[in-house]
Image (cartoon, rainbow, N blue to C red; front, side):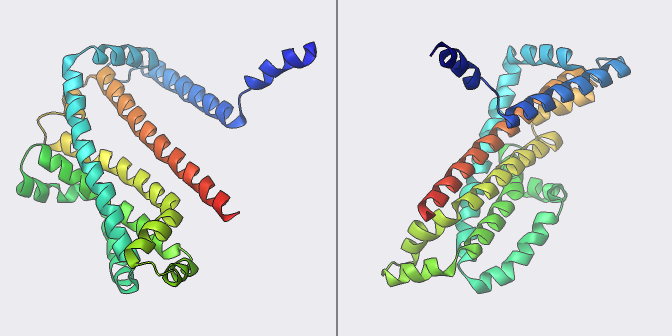
Length: 265
């Protein structure tokens, strides 16, 4: 009995192989970062992990940082809501029409491959300098992949689902709500994850080129001053935010995917 009691805590605290691999990858990245920073020898050119961590803590204590973070967060929230809701809605409409999918899907793929920053001067002319142009560029980056993934998920749904819905007397809207969307949800969440990441990228690009406030604007000013510590600190903060958003949507996709497999069984 004593052996079992002393054995259980060890099993409970044992790390899974995935967690160990991730910890090892982070440690390797930090080691390489420290080595490159030591080789450069100038923290203003390339700050190491310790200098970057200290600068991050300093930024967290500045009112300017939080004001810029609030501006970026508001733009990403608005652009993300439009990209995700609009992309899913348009994708459902296009995916449920064979003609629309055949005509519009190649156009969307071509639009997705274009560098969106080339359209920024036109966006500035239409929306002006400020929040509206950041939101518009974020939507322009994010809505297309959400539409493409939604169209693909709808088109990949087995046709028997639709026939079963019609046999039960469901309307087209009821079929989409109760049958099509639940079946396609994991793939749609994958598109939303990619779309939200690209929305964040679009907002930051807008702030880098033409904005009065935001983390992208603060990053641009740090680049103009060649402040390596602030550049690395802001880049790491933005990377952590993007990583957290990806992790949330990956967890949601995995959860709904497991739920769908369980219902099939």
